[in-house]
Amino acid sequence: AQSVAQPEDQVNVAEGNPLTVKCTYSVSGNPYLFWYVQYPNRGLQFLLKYITGDNLVKGSYGFEAEFNKSQTSFHLKKPSALVSDSALYFCAVRAPTSGYSTLTFGKGTMLLVSP
Amino acid sequence: DGGITQSPKYLFRKEGQNVTLSCEQNLNHDAMYWYRQDPGQGLRLIYYSQIVNDFQKGDIAEGYSVSREKKESFPLTVTSAQKNPTAFYLCATQDPGNQPQHFGDGTRLSIL
Image (cartoon, each protein chain N blue to C red):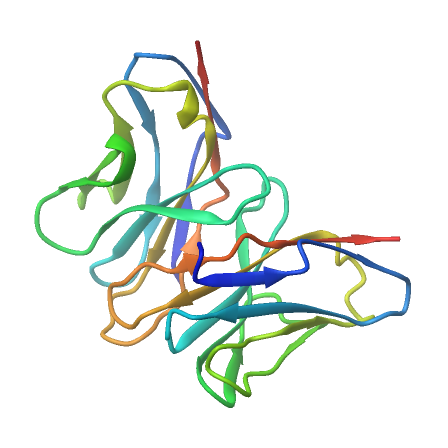
């Protein structure tokens, strides 16, 4: 069975400071990993994915994520946080396939960026 | 996501009543998914469909039913057997392989 852990319910950071939102995963084989962001009363928006290749993945809105196979982690990062980055962030994993496989989500981390 | 339309945005259910949530997509994706979101619990998979006229149960299918008569549509019925239906329901679609899922803006279901 596959699983995702987001160990922090909430992350607080001051605007302009770097941010990290943590994610660890468990899956058979090489993982497909995803980060999504959710604003209040909205659906999830895709930020970035890791499939294969470079361990540092760049995505939307200046976000990036670092894949670490030995630590089974996929932490989301941004060099300089904005107040508008305040939202709920989800990490997700699924097993690799050329077809479809189900996606497993973490419980989410609320990011609060203070002015 | 403009390509996935969920309606209504808010829905109220009376005791003993079945209600149906609509999900329509124009992304031409074969696969469609229904998730339930509760505070602090992330997203949990209810049902999914990879092709018309076929669907599979997810992790929490009890008390729910679906149909997939058209590629564009994947309605979810919350039956009276679902004793705790209050939640935010999200529909998603996907292309095959390593593509991300795309989400609608959700329906919030509450009990009257």
